[in-house]
Amino acid sequence: MLIAECRNGVGKFGKVLKQADSVDMVIRDFYAQGFTPDQNSKAYMFARCCKSHRVFVVSSGIDPKEVAAMFMTGFTSVAEAAAAALSSYDRPSVLCIPYAGDCIPVVESAATAAGR
Image (cartoon, rainbow, N blue to C red):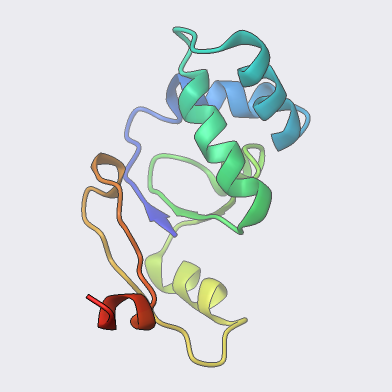
């Protein structure tokens, strides 16, 4: 679940996603073109995520229909998005990462962590 105000809309990477017919098209285009000024690398990263995961976006600056055009599910409230995201798990766990776009988290299994 991504929570972002997006006061200026979806930006260049969102336009790349919305113009594509599928996440596979975004991925193929990135491999063919490489990095470009239109933020296709960010679109590529989102497409990779959307290919194998459900992505829920909570934003006051983007309409849920526009989010759907980018292969994600949009919500206007955190509670609604959380209920949808957690509904398919028996014992869900949640990790909140402020400014997550600025870091790369490393998730270890309990067995790996215990072996240190």
